[in-house]
Every structure is written in C-alpha cells, then in structure tokens.
Image (cartoon, rainbow, N blue to C red; front, side):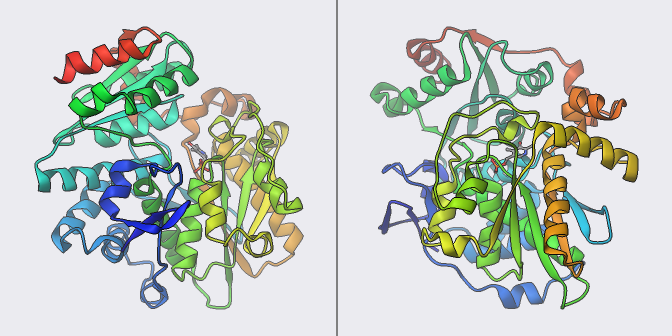
Length: 437
Ligand SMILES: *Cc1c(COP(=O)(O)O)cnc(C)c1O
C-alpha cells in the first residue's frame, strides 16, 4: 500500500518512509492513500482470534509489498507480548484496559510496533538509526521501553529537569542499555526546540542517522487500530446490537486509529470523543468552528492539548466535511470535579480503581448512554492508563491507594541514570557527536 501527506496526496511514499520520516517534509501528516475493505475478514474473526493474529493480518494488508510474510509475523509476535483486557462494567458498558504493557499506558502498543518494525527494516538493510525525541513525561517512557535492546538503534530522550513527576523520571532514567536520558536545564518547550533544531542541523544530519518516534508517526497510529478490532470481537454477541467506542482524547491519535478500523469495515456505529475541559474538538463538533487555544492544566494531564496534532488527519478521513464527521463522532466534555466524582463512584459501585483519563471516558459513555436511551448497544470505553500511575488523584477521590504495577515498582527501586545538559542546541550537538561518532 502507498501513503501520502495530508497536504500533497499526489506524492506517494512507502510504508518504510512514513515510519522513518514521521512528519512529511511539507509539514503534513502521512495517511494511507486507499482504504481496503476488510469487512469479510472481520466477519471471520471471533473471540478466539488472538491479538497477534489480528496484528499480523492487518499488517500484511498494509505492508506486504515491503516486508515478507515472515518478517510481518516476527513483528506481530515481538511487538505484542502484552495484551488488552476487556472488563464489563455495567449491562452494556465495557472497559478495554490498554495499560498492561511496559510503561502501563496505551502508548505502549504504538511505540512497540514502531520500534519492532524499524528494527526489522534496519536489519534487512544493515543500517543504523538514532531515535531523538523530547518528552514532557509519558510518551518518553513508552518510547524508552519499546526501543530498549533493539538492534542497530540508539535512543536519546530529552526531558525537562525537575518538571516531570518523580515516577515519570524513574521510568525514563532507569531503562539504560541503548537508551540515554538527557536531563535538560529548561522546559519541555526548550527540549522540543533542541530536537527540532537538531533535525535541521546540516552537520548532525550529514553525520548521524537521526530519526524521530513522535506520536504523529503513522507507525504508531496503525497498531492502535488493532485493539478496536480485538475489543469488538470480544463483545459482539448479537448481530443486532450496535457497538460504540468511547475514547479519552488529547491529540486524537487514538480516536483516529479507531476511525481507520471503521473505514476498513469494522461495523462500529459511532465514536464518543471524550475530553477534559480542553475541548476544542467537541466544540467543533457542536459548532462547526475549530478554534485552537492554549491548553489548560487538568487532572487528566495527558489530554491537556489545545491544538490536537491529529485533527488534520481525522478531518482528512471525512473529506473535511463537518456534516459527515458529526454522524460518526460525538463529543462529550468532563470537568475535573466530575473526574474525581467518577473515580469515587466507580470504586464504590464496582470496586475497581480507574485513572483520571479513563474516568473522563466512563462518564462520557454513561452520559451518551442516557441521551441516546438505547440499551440495545454496547459501549467500549478505552482505558488508557493504569490507576497506579496517578496515585495522588486516585487517593484523593477514593481515600485508598491503588497498587503500583510491578513494572513501575521495580523502576522506583533502580538508580536514576541521566546526563545533565545545558538548554542549548550546541550542547545537544556536542553530546550527539561525542557519543555517536
Ligand atoms: C496520550 C494519552 C491520552 C490521549 O491520547 P491521544 O491519542 O493523544 O488522543 C489519553 N490518556 C492517556 C493516559 C495518555 O497517555
């Protein structure tokens, strides 16, 4: 299959190029140029179809002209040693837990698939790569874990000193091996600027195989479609029941992946875009006007986004037509007070802990359920992070402390290993040249 930038549909690129380039040179986002009909394939799947099978089947359709069947099987098996878990909350609301990977958030699915795919391409060509990325906390740990131990790949992650949580810092700085954490004496924006400048620094790009792994990479988005298919096969009991997905959203990568699955023929009736008060997309769905604005800090901070980077990709899927998108995606907005109240209520009624992002999704699903007064449908809420990652908030809401997942408990006991550097492009240039040439 061929891919193209949202801003230049004529210029076709390979899957490999979308994966190694991340952002298109014209500033657009890479998208598939065709939408294959996989509905027959989906009909043949059921609750016995494994996640690895789903990953393998879809990847073959997307990349079989560039990777051999063996290579694709290897990618599917190696990328996903962890699985989604489906739990039923009420008669018709289900939770799809996506936090059983190494960094305990859904971003592990995308990062792991991207890392494994890059490793496969590099092995084939005997090339090397250096992944350079800036993080404000969560994305970095998924990338660090995903690329750890990958052959021919080194990873350099910049994070703002003193501005990530102690747990996030441990997750970033205790991986070791081929992963280096650079602790920058500056803000997240400074880190991002240093990375952006490195990618256009002629000296660096001529001497080092720099590449990015940020969240707009199509190689991180595509694998997120797999768990929509997986969730669907595990709830679908009756052909007359409609299925909705409810997606706690920030940059809207996760929701876009769901729309891909739907475009490929997964019979989903609709999607609920659940946000915190950073609600530019629900507002757009209401009014038809998209107004980006600076983000506001909330308890579900991985969704504090004022100008979602995947909005352009999402709109491209609906030919930029407001009337079309409104028939498939419904917006719901949840405040911090409601988030805390939902965490408390879910704990009291169902005896499970949920993190603040999942809470936004659950309340949005309950509201949608009441509004549509349609009990004959299943709503699957994507649960995006482990509650143990947000101990303070969960404790504030419930008065109890959820258990820390093993992976995080282990990281907390390890010594921090980081390289402290000045907030300057020159400092990053020197570090990269000293380390890798
Ligand atoms: C990144 C993230 C989100 C938002 O996902 P998008 O794809 O950016 O919409 C939601 N919840 C958690 C826990 C996240 O880390």
